[in-house]
Image (cartoon, rainbow, N blue to C red; front, side, top):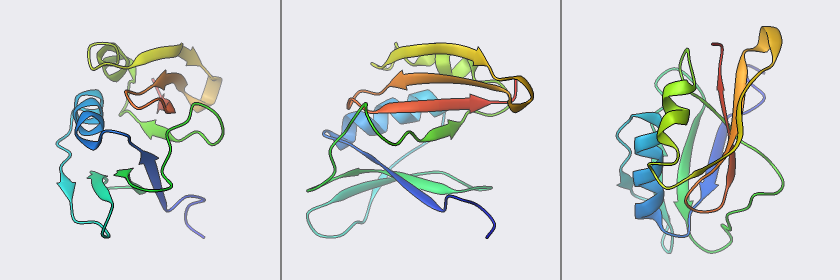
Length: 121
């Protein structure tokens, strides 16, 4: 087993809004692509790691409770954290030092999901 995680999906009420938010947050181009009938999906670029997507459809309900996905924010999460509110999200927990494991922060995205951000600096 190489990773404990191999794929994640972040629920979206408004897929276009979610794409704008995460594109701005992560500084990457995210596009809506093909999905199963009745669903819309936008894959978050993941050239060197575990992949995931924003998804809209039946059974996908945003939540600030339950499982938390942590997004890798490069060597320093401060630039991404600085874009959260301008992109329409909210910072719930500011950048926090977790010792040898780096730093994390919690945000609420435009859809109402609590998401973790992580970096080593």
